[in-house]
Amino acid sequence: MGRALFVAIVVVIGQLSFCHAVDRSPPVSTNVSRSPHFLAIHPDNPHYFLWCGEPTILISSGEHYGAVLNSLFDYEKYLRTLASYGFNHTRVFCGLYVEDNGSKQDGPQLGNTLDPAEGQLLCPFARSTVLGYSKGGAKFDLQRWDEKFDTRLRHFVELAA
Image (cartoon, rainbow, N blue to C red; front, side, top):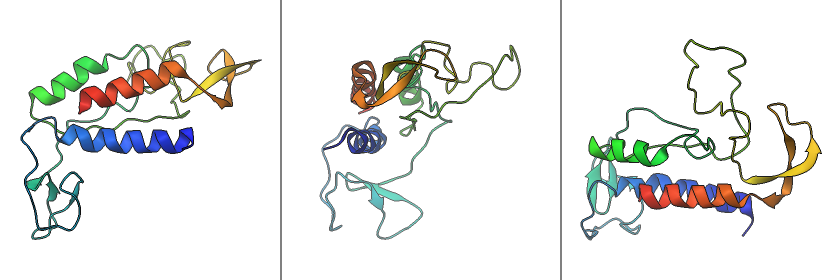
């Protein structure tokens, strides 16, 4: 399996497995043809999902797209906070997309998790030896996987589950 496909699958699993974090009871059998371990549209009410055989809605207060790619972001605290409120959903970006806060020291973008400080960006690809990345440091080698990113993403998904 290619690394890009692996990342896509892990992100989807992470989103779905976090749904189970609030209720760890065993799956309930269902008449739905899909496995009860998949998120599905509820067969009797399309305004709800079906998860582990039970009606479910996805609840979250927002997102921290940079929770994995910004190495300074405390995603463990973030996931604990979501769970403490009974929230069961989050989303993350896993790639090279980042935002540029520029030199702003205040305003709505201050603390933007998608604008990691120089040297704090983790992404699926390892850095090359060629300088020139627009936000500082070397460009990315799209043929090599970054193990720090891999470790952080796997840990995020494990905690979210």
